[in-house]
Length: 411
Ligand code: NAP
Image 1 (cartoon, helix red, strand yellow):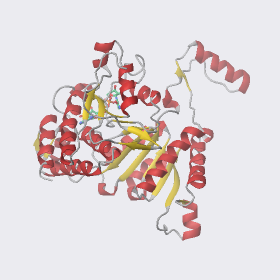
Image 2 (cartoon, helix red, strand yellow):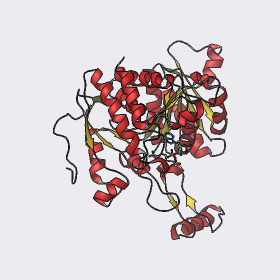
Image 3 (cartoon, rainbow, N blue to C red):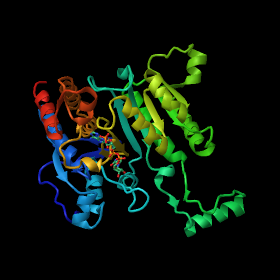
Image 4 (cartoon, helix red, strand yellow):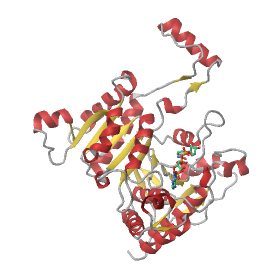
């Protein structure tokens, strides 16, 4: 099954039956460090995750696989089949960041992983940890879970360079058959947004809201301008809410007309906002937003902006979820200038691990991790990124993880 890696002898496989994950107490979880600061943050996160998991009497059996530069040295391939097969087979994986060349070079490995494994929802919780510096006055009001569609939109990478035969042909067809004029020296990108992909994303977001007793689901779009892609995203979203979750959801219009603006117990309000407005809404009226669903490109922008409200990229965890398969990764990239310096903040990767534990149903271990990170930061033990904002005791990546583990041991 694998060409150049050997799965661990111990540990059991996570299964998926009737729409549910069956998690053993010692699951095999493939992981890779990826590029740049991956070699700093992933080992630090794994040590913290192992300590938390041990506290609840479980064990993760890690299976090292390869992606990025490290994989290229072994396979002459940045994303070998071994790695994709391991994730497919074992169902849940942890990853570090991967570098993507801008302009030319190879395609984004992150986008490829999401597409090949059909990890259609990029799920990013954004919440504030006590003690973390924030540019807003009340960061504790920020508590969103962002569901970003991740297989479609202009982000799917369907594009051709200026002057290529594909671009010129499309320009010609658009002119000849549709009367649309495009400058000949244009690069061309395509923005597909389908009913199928939109509905399954919004279905997952609403289910999450129900299961986690969230108050609202906001559909974010730029449908005033891009009516048949972004606008359709909104319309299909309302359709899912109305047709599949009638007992659980009301729209914002119904809230105002039928309930005098007072949210009835047990109902989730489904509303929509235009994307540009939403960027200011999450800053000025944070408490009004909860679960947020968006198409791919705006989802990418909004989740980085949202992360900045609660401490920035060094803090923000993320995940890529499909049906019965999930890959966990921080929002930040490979920050190559800091690679291997034992300098950057491992919090995002550690919290990504906490998110993974929650997904496995090990909420207690996940909460312990969050609590011990808060304790560490409140004790003033911080990496350079937080140190430049709040001072305190400056430590490296490894030492920060050690301090988190020490705090874990007191819980
Ligand atoms: P980046 O790697 O996220 O780094 C941008 C800046 O964010 C860093 O210079 C640093 O800020 C701060 N930062 C990021 N991670 C941090 C951490 N753990 N601790 C503290 N500060 C942290 O973004 P980028 O420079 O735009 O991208 C670099 C490469 O990563 C690109 O090839 C990009 O395509 C790739 N990327 C990959 C992923 C992924 O694998 N999912 C995601 C995004 C980007 P200061 O310089 O201010 O200290």
